[in-house]
Image 1 (spheres, rainbow, N blue to C red):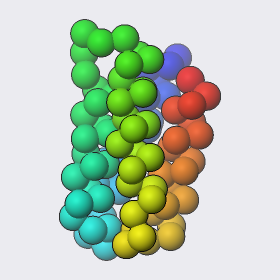
Image 2 (image 1 turned 90 degrees about the vertical axis):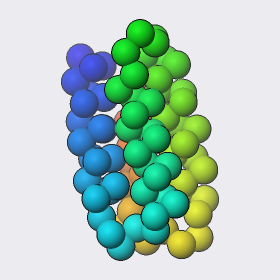
Image 3 (image 1 turned 120 degrees about the horizontal axis):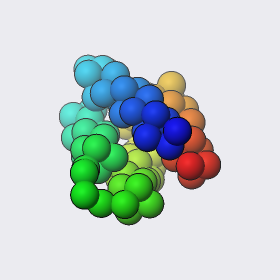
Image 4 (image 1 turned 120 degrees about the vertical axis):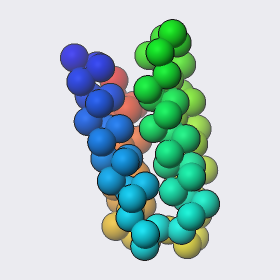
Length: 82
């Protein structure tokens, strides 16, 4: 069940990454967060923690669009609940 939630989160992160209204540096961090969640061989807790670290830094960026920031906050909440 947790893996299914992670797949949904990765899909949303991929959508944000493809949004060209989001600054390039933010899209790079979003991609890093998605890659961290997809890493095989690491426990789910480690993958989530690494992804949360990337997303935390992104959410503080002043150049990020407000709707994207809201999406990121929702993703962070979902990851913290897993």
